[in-house]
Image 1 (cartoon, rainbow, N blue to C red):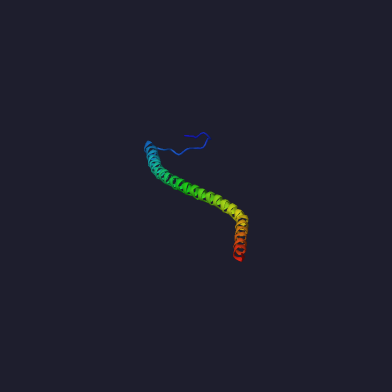
Image 2 (cartoon, rainbow, N blue to C red):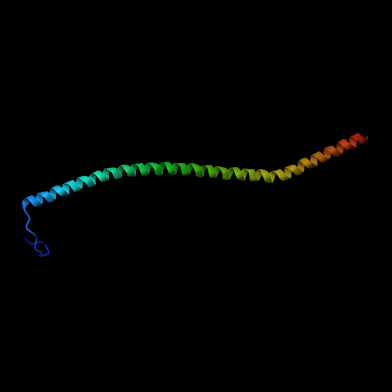
Length: 104
């Protein structure tokens, strides 16, 4: 017997061929079992990644909120200087008025 390339093939019996098929079937069953475990591991990994993605989204949302809070605090700080000057002017006017009224 010769293969497609002209190489001489060893003589095989029907029993040897059936044994090879049986070995192939056993090998394929093992591959399918391993594949089932791999699919389960992949599903668990995807679930963990989804949870991490959600946690990261929450963390980013928190940082964006903090950035907004710091903007507001910055605006309040900018507003505090003129407000302090106005309050100081008012206090000095009232002190001057109280001193003027006390002199009379």
